[in-house]
Length: 324
Ligand SMILES: NC(=O)c1ccc[n+]([C@@H]2O[C@H](COP(=O)([O-])OP(=O)(O)OC[C@H]3O[C@@H](n4cnc5c(N)ncnc54)[C@H](OP(=O)(O)O)[C@@H]3O)[C@@H](O)[C@H]2O)c1
Image 1 (cartoon, helix red, strand yellow):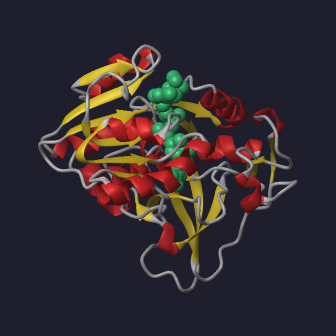
Image 2 (cartoon, rainbow, N blue to C red):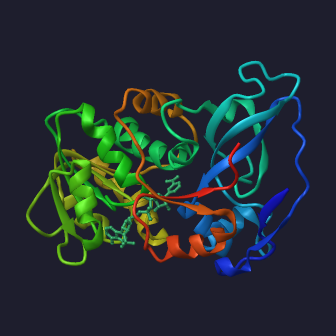
């Protein structure tokens, strides 16, 4: 089968477009013919082996994962003997980040527990844009953020994969939502329903006098004290990503601030696929539809990871591997 192969860390041009053996599922797995995949910060980090902490988990000198790619949608082509909830022909989608990656290929074997049925009212391309980003938004806003109607919420990185889904998740709450991102994405953000938008290159949301009940952050790059100042009494700041130093600071000092004040500042650790069936229901009811950049072709994946890293995309970059 064709696959994008990672043999050494480096810029995305180290990736080879090559051939790999078609995998064979064990008793608890299914074989998926992948229709579509999408690009994530995870891929950008894994391919470069940066930040360094990635190498502690995925290989110090050489990556242990040889085929990257975490978000997929596709059709089941074979099932292991212990698989009971899925059958050949089922259309599925999922996040492979806890099951060895492998999404940048024609086929992958996936444990049954990792899978969700693809909502029938969206395309494979749209479905592949959802698992990683929608679950970050859901776990950030609902599980950790405890969002409630009447709140004023700010989303930093509002025009990216997480932010474009987060605003749609908030449609079932009566909340006021401010979105922050670069100037080119502000029109898209307004069209998705953000009540007000800000260009992060012109306005510092931690320093403009506004305070929020809940901040969902994708790019932590300021001091934890600035974030704490941007919260109202009982406010919550939940970050899903940012610079490693800032995340460590928020993890350590955020817990202290949370002990001595009514404000809570926390770092979210993604639980892949937890809540994906709930996302499926929101998609089926029409509440959520991913914003996609693409679809692009398989051979473009190395360039697209670079394009992602340069932050030129809006919403999720999607690749159609092969129609199935
Ligand atoms: N916590 C976990 O377990 C976990 C797991 C997986 C991923 N993650 C993290 O989750 C995040 C995923 O975000 P995503 O998929 O939405 O990424 P994305 O698609 O790259 O979106 C991020 C957006 O933020 C904007 N941005 C860049 N710098 C900014 C700044 N200083 N202030 C405000 N906005 C800024 C970018 O715009 P421009 O580029 O145009 O500036 C982009 O539109 C990543 O940080 C990733 O590392 C966390």
